[in-house]
Length: 628
Image (cartoon, rainbow, N blue to C red; front, side):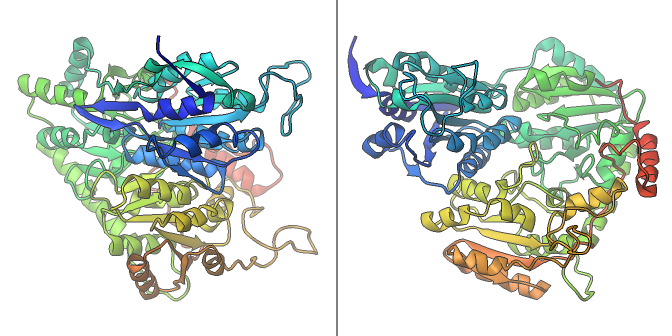
């Protein structure tokens, strides 16, 4: 057996450089590079390996400003690549490793592949406790890295070099499986990273992992066809799996050919262009009138590549037809079986192709003319509502959030990738942003992680350098993680960041009011010395000056014309731009025939809370507990 002597860190770099994926006959190198911040736990291990072998293996290294942010960058990059390419992320021991936990959860919840190498305590335990090690009083083999277990799809701790021979292939099997993918975490003790071993040369041979497209079982397909043929009011709920599978053409065909309306989730928005006749817009809590009215009365709901989260189902209140049936088309069995669905465990593209073929062979003519006309009326009504909300009303004062969205979308069009994650912006963008292709909408709403936005902008820009990238972020989320502006400057990555300054967490303030609680702790205000509460004047933060200090082109826009001018300057610039837009917090977009289950206090001396509880109890009656 031929061997080569390398450290564990060097072996990791060389192995990652030789892994490829293939789908539909097209091969991609899977790991596009490493992100990392060095400390004593990894500088002499993985750090040394990347410095020595990175250029030879064409494995670039990127330095972020925060370990959580680097995982968000990797997640956005892989999401934009339809999970066919990913980044690896490394950290030092202790705090650096724990900083990646939130990013790991974000990737796993959204079914996106990221490869993580957090450093760990000494495997030999001679320096014990080592700097930054957290000691457990009775479990000597426990470290902070065990916190990765519940948020990773794969976890292993390497205490001897030869364990890597089985561990890394197992990690890549999970990363490249469309049903199992998420964060894969390989914990590397700092002494093991630097340890030398005689590795089999075969371990580093080029390996191609085929991304499978499982076909639907004949019996499951027949069940789905039977339900569709007899349905009078079917609706397709299109999720992120439609886009990851590159099934948008097949979705358009089944919708158009058979007159089945399509409603969107956050991850599925863009699968059909906004003006496609069968695109009824967003569904659920953040949905619009067309989608929610159709789902309310639907006798068949066909989920395609969706997890059926509570925002899509409006906390199990969307489907009010007592006889509703559900078909779950998903590559992951856990998702295909949700809500007592008739499962079709298959790749979305292959399942839709098979459905079209089988329905045509069975002589299915599609939905009735009256149903199509009803859906069309709903769509026209919804499109008119969206146009009105996006239009600047001319009243004096700061712009409303919907008006900002309208102006930005008008200027950059429906092909620029808009990025968001948290607050009220994702809901407003889902309703109001008009998209023309599947990669023009990138909102992380599986975990809705504050701080994702700017980092994700870098990931999308790296994934597709020629696409315009626009990050929409509230001031609260901006304050949580804006440091990657420095990374964008250092890497020469051009993107436009639009910061909507509404003085804090106005989304949660509105939610707080809706559950009857007086305003408390959500706005960026000074403490009132008389009441000792945070009810003083707004804290003035000069976001424009802050962004300029980090090297961005920083602009202030108070009016629609100033915003259009700022966007034009940003598009003409050769670097990252930040546009600050003061926004009126009271110009809110309301709900549309939807609900979200946020429990209201069951006992209170406050009248507002008691009234809200009564309304809450009334709304809960509509929840479909029979769909579990």
